[in-house]
Length: 234
Image (tube, rainbow, N blue to C red; front, side, top):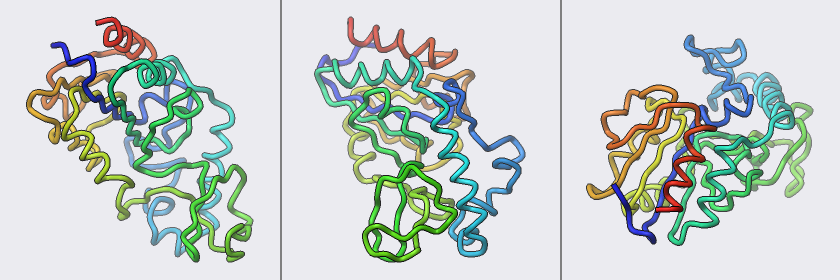
């Protein structure tokens, strides 16, 4: 199924694409993140109850980011954005910065960004590369109220109006390395136009596989570069 050469494209990426760079996903089948229950490190209530534990957890994730690099799938998506004549929006469930480091410029991180912090006192969002556990003061207001710029369970994902607007008028929707169980991301394919081409790229068919017209099974580092070449050379 071909799409118009100037059709808009929305790409959704999940943990699978970053895992191929060696980035640990932290969550296992038992619901544990680095030995912690989700309720201990990924909710506003957890942060209110034990802020030092939560800060140390995300500090460790932020430090791990320094040890990994973008892979071939990240680089291919950056090429797609650069060379496709139409609009390309990259929506990611990941909180790493591998897409940006690969060269993608139009990235919407719906679950926040590890390398940013947010002040709960003045609401300023700022770039942040160091640990937050020592409770440093906010550069904007001086309050010791910084938290990771992460969307925790119970909080609304970022940019939903922009995401759903782009999905509702896209000619191609591609989901890469997503589990298909986390909403609202899992419901995006259902918001595409009936005429849209929809492709799932995954190591195996996800729980949302039946909602896609096409499936490409295999590692993102192998499948995505080929898919991008196919789109650009059509």
